[in-house]
Image (cartoon, rainbow, N blue to C red; front, side):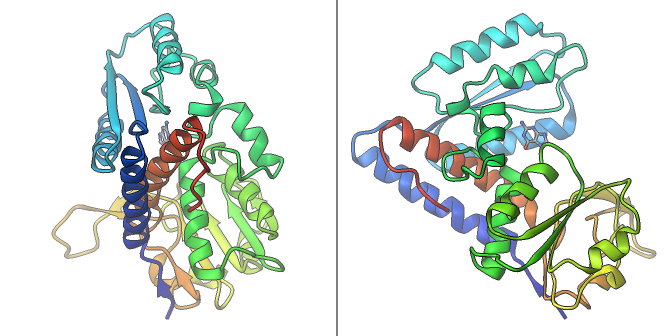
Length: 299
Ligand code: GUN
């Protein structure tokens, strides 16, 4: 049976470090890291995510601001807000929660965020740095950065000689994940919905990262014995027969069959999920440290 990778406790340790470094910043006369989270509209899932980001920022001792804008906010208004936050010395990180309402051009809005405050790592400057292997100066998107930390906890920092398969090619997870694994010396395969014979591709993976959004798609017999499995998926599936709740959360990996073959596996929930917010805090702290002329903390 596989080891369960405890994302909750690894995320808690990251947050503890962020708290301690924030306290050090304050005691050496610097300002608290500032995080501005912007949400447009009333998408219930986005509201929950944003509230937990703002809350965690407060818990870390940050200056935490949330801008909650009406669903019909104009692009001009939103761009002006981002411009003002770019200029505001009290703000080190700006996060615009996605998806945005359809009348807003998300690409334009994200690219308006100053690269040095782009703690989501979506600005093309940060995307380019990551692809170029400049992982020490880039802001890396929080979910793949968190997934990478979990992989390092299992396999160490140098992944030379290991074969990694990333299933899913999104800009938020799949592509940056592949860049991180490549920077760590893995031989990387990017698989996606059009990949031929996906089970066989997955069977070659020492490290398998699933980010496709298909409930329990990756089965136990797709898993190389001893592999490290990172499940980024969060899907709602019907509850098990006889269970009290009508639905349950599942990942993209069929946990019960896969954990019979894997060496280590992340659970859903409690795996990658908690790491995303923790890495947002880490990125915001890093941005504040750089703005203060200090060394960037490494996690
Ligand atoms: N929506 C879902 N995930 C994310 C994320 O990581 N960042 C932002 N800004 N929006 C999201």
